[in-house]
Length: 261
Ligand SMILES: NC(=O)c1ccc[n+]([C@@H]2O[C@H](COP(=O)([O-])OP(=O)(O)OC[C@H]3O[C@@H](n4cnc5c(N)ncnc54)[C@H](OP(=O)(O)O)[C@@H]3O)[C@@H](O)[C@H]2O)c1
Image 1 (tube, rainbow, N blue to C red):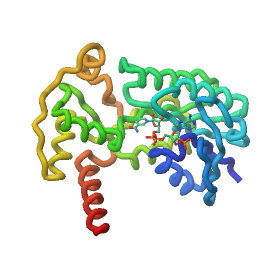
Image 2 (image 1 turned 45 degrees about the vertical axis):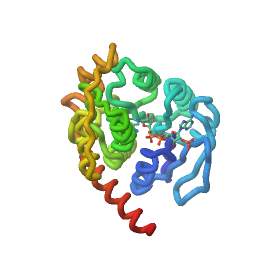
Image 3 (image 1 turned 30 degrees about the vertical axis):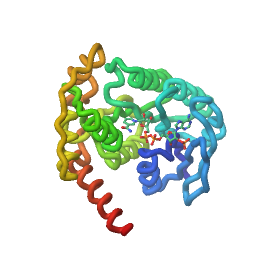
Image 4 (image 1 turned 90 degrees about the vertical axis):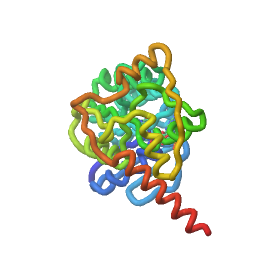
C-alpha cells in the first residue's frame, strides 16, 4: 500500500482540482486544513495551520510526498519554513511547492514572500520541486470587473492567465513524479494587455467601456511595463484562453438565470 500524499491547501480552488487527479492516479490524499470536514473515499483531513505551525507533525505521519498549496495574502514565507522543518523531522522524501511567475523579480511584498517560500524549499535538504504558475483566470476576473467601474486601464499591465484545470494537471504530474527542482513556469496560452481582457469580457456580455490609460508609478510600474510578472520563453503555455474562460462563465451564468426562473 502506498503512503498518503499530504496536500496543504487541498480545500482551495487549485487544491479542489488537483486532489481528484491524485486520487485518479490511485493515491490516497491527506489534506491539511484549518477547517477539517468529513472524510471521502481515499481522502482524509487533518486540522492544522501552516502559518502557526500547528498540526504539522500529525499531518506528516507516514507521508513521503507533500504538495504545498496553502497560501494567503500574508505569511506564506513563514508557512513554508514551518512545513519544511516538520517535513525534515518526519523524513519526507519529496516536497512540491506552487509559486508564482515573477516571484524572483517583482518588487511587491506578495512576490517577495513567494520567493522566500521557494528559498525555504530549495535550502531544505529535502528533494524538492517548485512550479511557478501565472495568475489564474479566476484571479484576473475581479480586476477585470473592477477596472471599468474606475474607467481605468493601467498602461503596460499584461497578464497571461491560465485555467485552473491546466494548473491542476501539471501539479499532479510533478507531485507524482521524481523531485525535479525548478521546473518550467506554467502560463496561459496568450499574453494580453489588461484592457484587452476587459474588452473580451465586455464583448461576451454585449457591453463596452471606454477606459482611460493610467500610468502605474514607481518601481512597481516599471516592473510591470518591463514584463517582470510574465513567464519567459522556457515556459509551458497551455490551457484555455481568456476568451474561452469568459464565454464558458458567461454561458453558465446565463443558464443559471434561466434555470432559476
Ligand atoms: N490563484 C492564483 O492565481 C495563483 C497563481 C499562482 C500561485 N498561486 C498560489 O497557489 C496556492 C493556492 O491558491 P488558490 O487559488 O487555490 O487559493 P485559495 O482558493 O484561496 O485557497 C487557499 C488554501 O490555502 C489554505 N490555507 C490558507 N492559509 C492557511 C493556513 N494558515 N494553514 C493551512 N491552510 C491554509 C486554505 O485552507 P483552509 O481554508 O481549508 O484552511 C485553502 O485550501 C496559493 O499558495 C497561491 O498563492 C495562486
